Amino acid sequence: QKEVEQNSGPLSVPEGAIASLNCTYSDRGSQSFFWYRQYSGKSPELIMFIYSNGDKEDGRFTAQLNKASQYVSLLIRDSQPSDSATYLCAVNMGGAQKLVFGQGTRLTINP
Amino acid sequence: GAVVSQHPSRVICKSGTSVKIECRSLDFQATTMFWYRQFPKQSLMLMATSNEGSKATYEQGVEKDKFLINHASLTLSTLTVTSAHPEDSSFYICSAVDNRGRSTDTQYFGPGTRLTVL
Image (tube, rainbow over all chains, first blue to last red):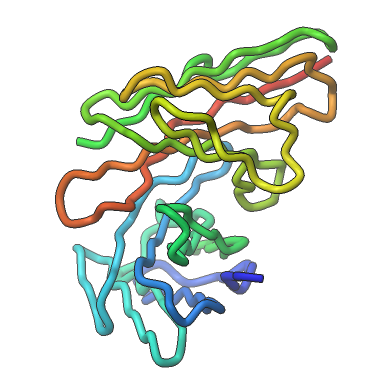
């Protein structure tokens, strides 16, 4: 069974620090990787996607992909209380644009 | 760009009635849309893949006769929950694939529809 795994948390980080979120996936042939943020009671919103090994930066967010180790991570620099949310890792495992979602990591940024 | 809307945002209905939820891509055309369901404190559960002009593809365990999907145009997909019962109460979220630009499989989500069946 194709799976995406995340630590459900909660992960607690002080304001201003770096939050590190990790995700592993089972299908070595996966090509596309996504991070979504979901606030309580709301729908997911896209943070960023990554296709190639290495780092991809967008503002305070950096996605890191290591296909050999089958993991993808998201770093949030200068964490703000507004970053408190559940972060969903999603992977396209080659199924016609279908994404497999992890269970999400609940992140709390403490002022 | 890549804005997806859903209507209604919230619906309360009596058991046995049918409820239709609309999902629209506002600034792009979407040949593929997805319908998800999310129960409290759980992750997204994919229900079906909606393809414009063809029948939807349902995930294992999802009753196609209960959850009717129609993707009649490149900007609109509808989900009808037929003969709704309290156990169908959930947060229903659609997403649409924006094929423009570099990413050809990025899903953008609508704001969701909270269904409560009494």
